[in-house]
Each structure stands twice: as structure tokens, then as C-alpha cells.
Amino acid sequence: MWWFSRKKPKEAWEETIQWPIGDIEAAERIRHVCRSAADSAASVGHPADSRKKRDAKKNLDDGERYKGAARAAMEIAMKMSDDLMRDAGVGEIIELCLKANDIKTARILFRAIQSPSIRDGMLSDHPALRP
Image 1 (cartoon, rainbow, N blue to C red):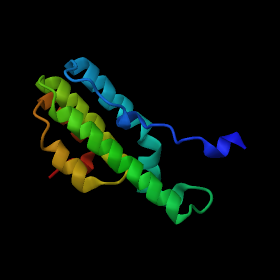
Image 2: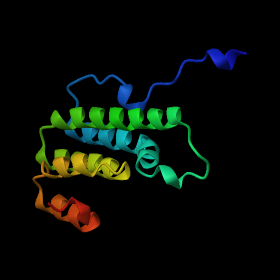
Image 3: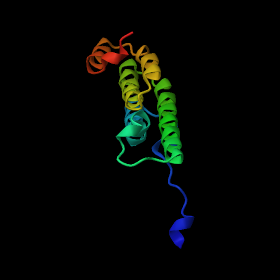
């Protein structure tokens, strides 16, 4: 059968980026990466929410998807020059970390946000980020 030999499609964060890109495009790419990995992050953070028991390989795959997406989004955010756009991108990554119940990484990233408006909005939505 032909579908057994198909290659696995590339993930959103595995696509090559032709640098330099603008800050708006970088923020859009971060948003796309974080939203495409949101389902894996949710299954990593709340494994008991699934209706049927998930096998260990599926949990491992979801964990790798989440970590790869977060790593790629952080690399993009580090190269952004506009502070406000970078803070918005880091906010998306924090949301992804919180879906995966990775509070430690979310708090570390939260300290990198410099904009008071984004910082206050994140604190009002997620009180667990308070130091």
C-alpha cells in the first residue's frame, strides 16, 4: 500500500527560515508554531484528560513536539529587534508552556518580558507566574 511508505510531514517549527525576516513576520511565525503545538502541550500537561489511556510512545512524541516547538519559538524570539514585538512573542511561548504545565520555564520566560502592559496582562490571566 502506498500510504505506508509516506514520509512524515514537516512540523511548522522545522521549516527553514530565510533570515533576515521582519519582526512582524517573526511574531507571526512564533504564533503559528505555538498554536500548532498547543494540542501536544495540552496532552503533556494534562495526560489524565484523555478519554482513553495513551501509550508511552504517544506521550513521548507529544513531549518531543512540545519541546521542539518551544525551542524553535525561543530561537526566533531571541533574534527579534523590536522589544514590544519580542515581548508579545514571548507571551505566546509562555502560554504554550502553561498549557504543558511547565511552570518553571514559563516563570523564567516571564522575567524576560519588559513591557508593563504585557506583563500585567499575563499576571492577571495567570497568577501562577507571580514570583
